[in-house]
Amino acid sequence: MYDICIIGGGASGIACAITAARKGLSCIILEKEDKLGKKIYATGNGRCNITNHSFDEDYSTYYNSEYDDYAAFLSKLFETQNPDKEIIDFLYSIGIVTYDINNYVYPHSLQSSSVMWALNDELTELGVKTLLKACALEICTNDGIYIIKTQNEQIEALNVVLACGGASYANLGGSDKGYKLAESLKLQLTDIRPSLCGLVTEEDTNSISGVRVKSKATLFSENGNPICKEEGELQFTDYGISGIMTFNLSGKAGRMISNSEKPYVMIDFLPDISDKAIYSAFEKGKKRKAKAVLNNFINDKLAGFVIDNTNLNAEIYSNNYTEDNISALIYALHIFKLEIKELRDFDNAQVTSGGIALDIINPSDMSIKDMPGLYAVGELTDIDGICGGYNLTYAIISGIRAGKGIYDKIKSD
Image (spheres, rainbow, N blue to C red):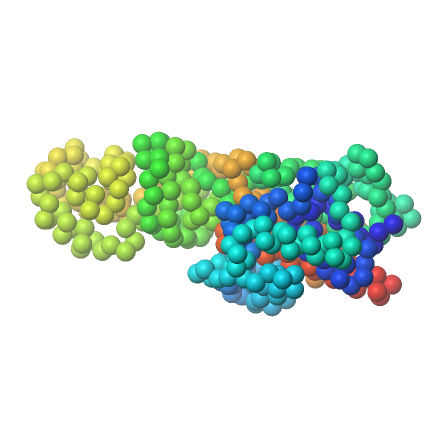
């Protein structure tokens, strides 16, 4: 019998196992894939963006959840305003030196493999047992002992940690199996949906697929309330919009869509260009077509798209445009509306929104309320972060808290 059976060999499960095993607890990890940490290998485009130095007191800036008070939940979980330091210290404890790029934190090698090799070596050194291609099919209890059944084995443990991950990226191990296990245990779940993904627009963007533009975007609710803002490089695709700034809007957009709302995005294609500069360009280019004048500032395909989707007089298509036409164009360039139809699917999403409800979890140790010996960590729970290492930060720290919490409980007993 083990002190802990951890179901899932991703970042949160590994962090839990290392923390508990360092304190002398016996641990076993059940991983349904053929190796641990498949998503870790892929994160940060293979460079492993492990955390971020940009944190402040309002964690709702970086995370999303159905739980109204999730910012307070994260504040209790992280314990300090510097969760990035805890991540860096944890990595250093296994021999990983980090490297900062514009507040994004990576292993100095800029290779995800270096992190996974160090984590695997630490697990081996600590004597943590790992069963690969072992899918937990059922969890039951008998006289306070958890019995976990796989295809081939039956594991007994005093404590179980659900670290099964989310449904995104099936080719990297994403699935709904963790949610089904949680349902079998009668745990409260919120609806799951893709996050950190592209947004499908009502507008036909096929003509500008592949165009990238530096811009600012604001996500609005159906009734016109601004929800959040992002800036950076916007990428147009044949289905709508993509890129990091779009991914960061997707978590909140998805929640509105799930509530039958119709969110929309207002884009400023020229956030650093004054109206005066645009007027001046039209004044100097009186003999040029509007698309050609706008090409001084943005991609010509995008210029044509803006013109075609703005309510203007036919004169704009020649060099005989009016001051009203120019004003309307400038307005459209700064406030261009795209209506969001839906999210991309799980196979095109980096993380999963929703999961085990936070109001049944104790943030101090990630234990499930009223179910002694049961814990839930990482992406399986109803927390999802924006791009930049925030999801790995949450996964690792939630795993650390569970490992320490189990040790403290066993010690007190």
